[in-house]
Length: 583
Image (cartoon, rainbow, N blue to C red; front, side):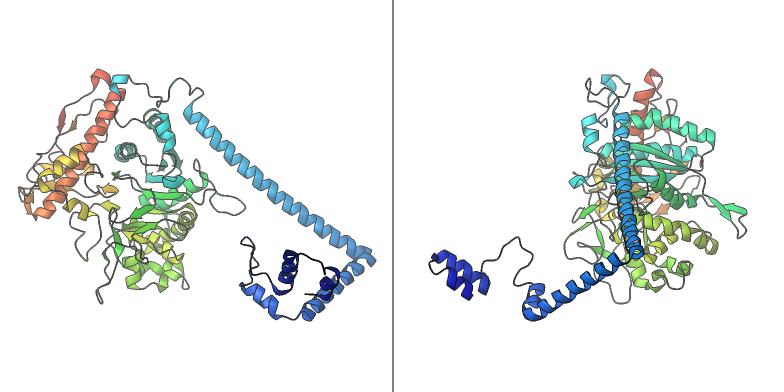
């Protein structure tokens, strides 16, 4: 010990001497809450440097500081300039803090006003959703207010917002209603919003009135956002030379993220207020059958990745994510997820629209297929989705100029994500759509789930249950194809009358319950005498889509009729989609 302690503490107690020794030698018991551990790199560096050097450095710094203070004090102009700079910095910092507080306060107040408006002024009389129907006509899909509030967020209080883009046509009107009801049926957590683009003033008012009467009462989480028309195709001079309706998807998404209810962009950071919200972008012709949460886990979900056959470049179904070792994947910043689509690396031909130095142009064919051949559902955090939306809007007109086809907007999405360095985890289980896909080494859809359902019960299950607790199911049915089994069982979205959800419209004629059992290994296209033969697997898949869609749409129509039609409701099942003309 230091001589001072030996001189003044000859009669010290043993524990005092132990304390003194620990000061000199370094205590063997470290404070568990201290960041200055004797094992840390910074502490080792500190211990290696001589105390004389540390003392010299301290003297230099002190001398430098005193010199500056002396010079400033002896020079009034310089002193005033320094003080003015300090004052300006203080005002700037205070201004930023105040603006941040005001923005946060405005956002919280808007949330409170929104919730109060949705719930109504008096919540004490009833906890049921305020829909003007009699008790005996209530439906199993109905929510109480408590149930609705519990669904405002997903697992672990994760904020979720599901959106889908439409125009204002009657054709997409019935698709919109089915989308909201499919979300209601499965208790999809988070908010669900329609983004409607290109409405005339009268169409916009009609849409708002319909939403207020038929959609908003179902859930305080169901919203509507209207945008200008973005579908015009323009030449280099700005003259409109055509129309591409799918421009509305990227531009509508961007408009909603900037101006939509519960959304908005911070003017200081130019980033979304709710940057952690999980955004799921879908299409109106997609029917939800299992909740989308941003969390995926085997065996309930099918990842695309795994090992590649040499030179094939194709994905395969896998139990783990592409770049992971655990059987689950969570959407987070920098890690979006989407359904795999079958265009593979076709978008690479147009990657030059992103510029010569873009990351999109450096993507290989295999990488293009494994991480960027994606389509809806697109799922990402709001932070990533807004970045994608900005680039999507920038690139899609350029892609369409070179490739004026249906897939231009999907190619532009892939180019945007590649440009931003946001590879997607591809999923097969998010969707089923094309019954010819999903084979080993092919384009990944969730048909593995459907193939596992016994053929003799596939139609009955799809029409009457469609419960993912009974049989594993994909998240959505994308009914963008035509489906047929045998002579008459048939579904095509363009054949369904636009006024299907009305009091006067009949229901859809139901198919035979044994379709999908292997009894009908063919389909007969409408207005043709020829038959198309296929396998028992194809029959089961076609039967599943027909029965699921007809069963759900009929139930959704009954849901509508029970609320709005009374005794005038047409309950006949007279619509034979096979024999109807194309809408």
